[in-house]
Amino acid sequence: MLQRHNLAGYAAFTALILVVAGCKKSNQYVPPPPPKVSGARPVQQKITRYLEATGNTAAVASVDLVARIQGFVQAISYTDGAPARTGDVLFTIEPLPYQAKLQQAQAAEASAQAQLVNAQTNFARQESLQRGAVASVQNLDDARAQRDSAQANVAQAAANTQLAAINYSYTRVMAPFSGRVSAHLVSIGDLVGTSPTKLATIVQMQPMNVIFNVSEQEVLRIRGNATRAGRRGEDIRAIPVEIGLQGETGFPHAGHMDYVAPMVDPGTGTLSARGVLDNADGVLLPGYFARVRVPLETGIDALLVPDAALGADQGGRYVLVVGADHVVAQKHVTTGPMQGTLRVIETGLSPDDLVIVDGLQRAVPGQTVEPATVETTR
Image 1 (cartoon, rainbow, N blue to C red):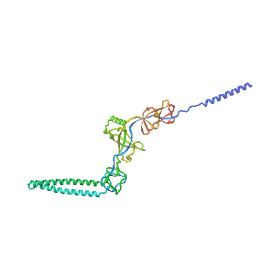
Image 2: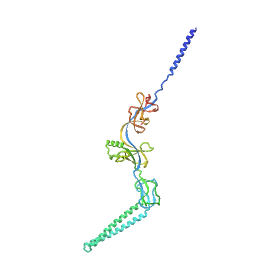
Image 3: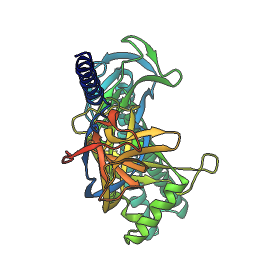
Image 4: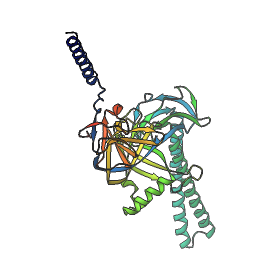
């Protein structure tokens, strides 16, 4: 009976051990699933390579308006900062004294003309008498001298009249070209012209220049591209130029190249260049900082990826790609310019690479991931 009881207890103990052993097996560690990421193939498209630089806008013409005669300012005929057209009268310097001098010169010229007529008549008379042997040669010579002197007096009087007319025209200070006029620097009643007196400044607003510098390496590159394209130096106006101001996206202002300096500055190793833009809307003002780009090559095959997919470390810029075995790898790349939201990849990437564009924070080089392929938004 006792032996039977012991056998029953031993069986119960064995069953308990098996139950405990089964529980321990069900609590073993199970690794988490691979992190999910989204990957996209690089976009293949043709692009335009640009020369990008920084520069400043500059007026095509800017002139100081200066009093060219002496007198008191009688009128100021414009509003400070307002536009003016070619020939608009901006300042008037008391005209009456110069008008009187003009009339005086005109009267002197008329008197000289009358004396010339009389001298010519006398010479003709003496010449006729000389032919008839009535007058002496001396009388004819005197008449000729009087006629020539009268002609010289007429020429001098005409010059005095022209000079008086010029000075009279200077009483009206006019806009030499269309533009905007700065604030006036003198007031009505001021005496001007005793020394060179600046009255205001007029600035031409349309078109507008942009001045920028190009490095020596870029100069060689541009010349090489131009030679391959069969362009000559005279074709510079056929090269477009685009600029963008601070706070603007992209390069919304378009124009064309206008000038390239004939030599490189040896001190800076740069070459000065100039573009011209219509500025029809008047947005551009002289002195603005400008981002400039000039197309160098068109129709170039390129690979592009979202700019957000790029990272950076001590080795430079890189992207994370998913290999065939779903293992993340890091690829260092050489980047080019932006094309919208995409970045041009010059080297380091192939068209078949699956670039991680979402879930970058979960992707670690050498780690297995679960990728989902998506299309890149251009």
